[in-house]
Image (cartoon, rainbow, N blue to C red; front, side, top):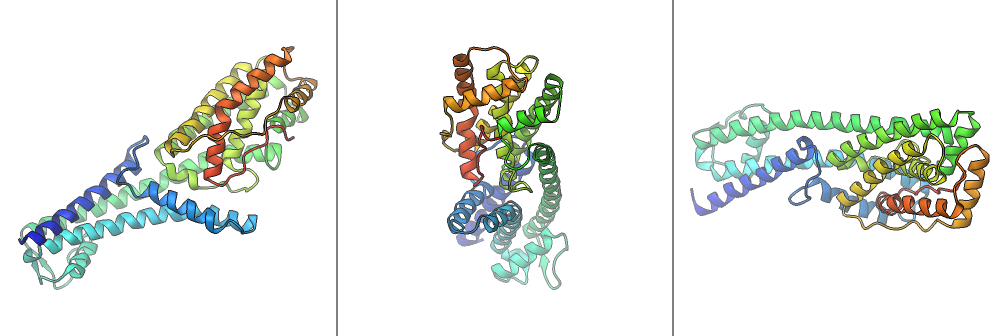
Length: 348
């Protein structure tokens, strides 16, 4: 082999190693991993920036439709890039081993053989691999079979994580109406005649479990964050923010029988938004919509509906401010990143 052929084969081997490492970290590894030498995270960053800049002046409905298709498009694009890079990598290796191939064509013929090997179709008619080239063709067939299997697993995991995330969001939308807020959630419980402690204990327990599940799936598969909810008026991040605001309100008011459950739900949910913001390397942004008179009015309304105990108003305000400061900044950063309108905690 000439030095140029050796360099070509080594370059192809390095490209294959990068692709297989990306597939392993994206599909198999159940934890966050660095963005170094990975395709998916950078595709998402560039695509999101481009779409937001391109659709800045579009009508809201049209923009939402495009953003709704962005997640699936990114998923398909990432899979296509994996396959294309594997074809190029094995093609470079086979072209570097052209002396072991008959006929000894150029890179185009080598890529054609690589495609047939990756798709486990065998060598194309008229081509023959000998020596090390035969070994490379066999490895390409194994790599193709492995990537196809992992791709199916990846798609099933994405579908499962999306279904698990959206089921509870749709239930919240049905209960509170469009654009849920923390105050609206609690008022809806009162209007439905639910017994406050049992119903809210179950509600916050469900959202605590939901936050834990979403934390696992969305950290393992960050591309899920680009999949929007089916209802533009109740995006999953806005729904989570509303639930965390409701938990902060109850915890601040010292609601009998629900304070501990609300605090636990808030703790897990706040960790979810903080971890996701950290994973996407976002700088937390504070949501300025927070003032003491509005809180006092909301607290009086909730106490009239049977929520809360006799707690010092100043202490309640400080407690609510502290709890909201734990989830609102990272939540605001995530909403900005994915073009989702954050919830208004005082709207009902």
